Image 1 (cartoon, rainbow, N blue to C red):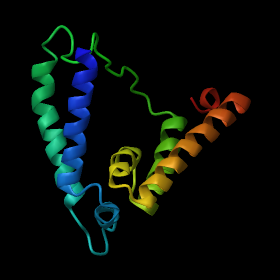
Image 2 (image 1 turned 30 degrees about the vertical axis):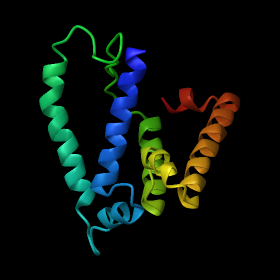
Image 3 (image 1 turned 90 degrees about the horizontal axis):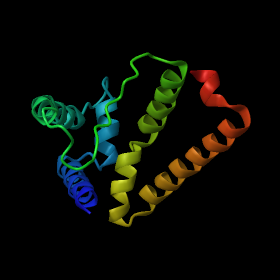
Image 4 (image 1 turned 60 degrees about the vertical axis):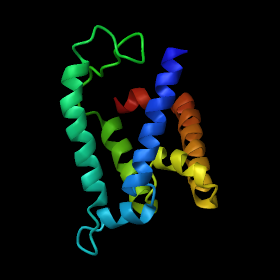
Length: 145
């Protein structure tokens, strides 16, 4: 129960931060990516704030034996750059750049009850399902590693 409550609190805090910072507005994302046009630094400040806070708190939190809201640490160990990482990043970037939505923002924006976030979220689920089916048939993950 403690872990679920922690996840709920962190998720709500994250979603509220996205809303306050303006990151839930696709126009702010597209404006940030338009470096040679009407550039909007909103995302830069949001990311700098997140990275700055993480940089400070991570060292303090890692001194604990276990995380506050989990039974164990889940620290990534892989450091190599694989074709799957590069291809996935490119596809993610294209989708994000075209629409201004990433998966996190699409899920959070569902609370607005607007049609566009619902379509984006549905498309993300459909894309994940399509990859799952293709991977099952063609073993893409292992071929790209």
